[in-house]
Length: 214
Image (cartoon, rainbow, N blue to C red; front, side):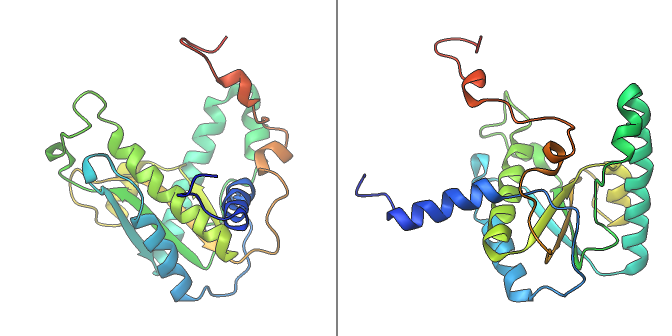
């Protein structure tokens, strides 16, 4: 082991957290300790970002009417997605894709306004702002799993409509509704795999050497 590496137990804890992270849709009503939420947000804020732009912004949702409006936005997009899926539409509608009304903690993650000022690392790949914010969400997700808090990333919404609901400035772009809370149990496997929607591909099928994977 490299002298810079962690101990065996520490490594195992990290890899276990990665393996057992789940996109959760079922939550208990019990409130979450705000110190735990703070640690999760700090983990998110410690994420890498291209050009150190730190494009993530977090909005805590406390207003019940706003929560309900967000749930309606998601429901509208859920039905639009089902229509776009054609023959799989009905199977999609039978999936539980969010827990907005049930989760005790509801947050929006958005990209900040005025991102055009950040050129470092984005001149040819503009989407690196999204990649950076996604790293922040993954950090929060893993911290949540380590804390025993379930997290579900919901992306079924119109970003402009959600931005209007949270009074986002022009140019800001919501990318995630995060449902968070205690859970009865973490899923044994990703829910979409359990439901037969898709299965994890083998790692080797995704790896190429000196060219695209065969």
